Image 1: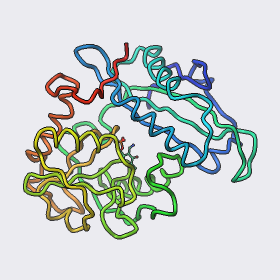
Image 2 (image 1 turned 90 degrees about the vertical axis):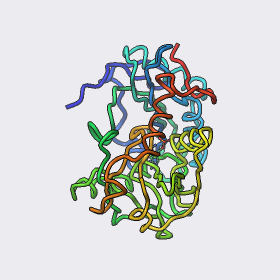
Image 3 (image 1 turned 135 degrees about the vertical axis):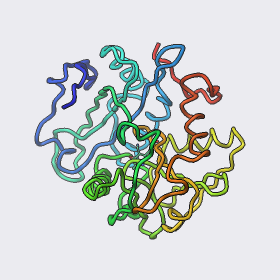
Image 4 (image 1 turned 60 degrees about the vertical axis):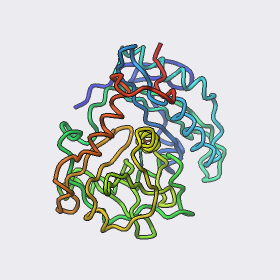
Length: 305
Ligand code: PMP
């Protein structure tokens, strides 16, 4: 169904798609022992720009550190590999997937199985469907909770975490919703299957704190910063489920989902049932980084060339 670009960076080399393979006995396939990133490259008036490339790859190395995975290449090499695959595939608007995984060479859980690395890139449109950025999606609260702190660290972007994400996302889609929202082990709001959550009350943004066992999203951090720069109040706090039914506006954010409005939760209309003024303003500020309406004050656009 999807046409992937031909070239992938794998263990220091550019390889053809068909050749960038691993073994069925790779440690990561069995035990989830991988860490990864998702990064977008946008077209700008000055050429393609990789959005917060270094911040994403710093998080990749932080995720690896949490799992004590020695990385065979340094951050500068992975940054360069990200640029290389986009260019080699002649992409401009693209999604990048840097990846590190335990491969072959020790099958025990505590084995020092060597870590291998790859970077793939492909074109990705709106993650939650055509038109989702404008029309918004219908979401539901998942029957699956997010993993508790002191079980699996939510702050690491590790392959195994996405078992939780798959349960949440697949349940939501099976029930006819666009995405699922999970509660934390505390019973309070956590995040979406692959997105952080923002609620709007009286013109202010309210977002769940890292204490809700969520991924410290780079889009989340971007929106908090842009909102504060624009004089919009931002509150990071724990919130109960029913706030989803009471807020004026609601949206999800992530590298893949960008800023996706949520027009209903559990079949209950949110606010006016379409993206509200604060959500629109946040979308403008974010997408304005790429069309020049928002100055890149924080050096987030890392040009391809
Ligand atoms: N939470 C989870 C579980 C995610 O997978 C993602 C996507 N990486 C996010 C939040 C959003 O993070 P970011 O903005 O860094 O893409």
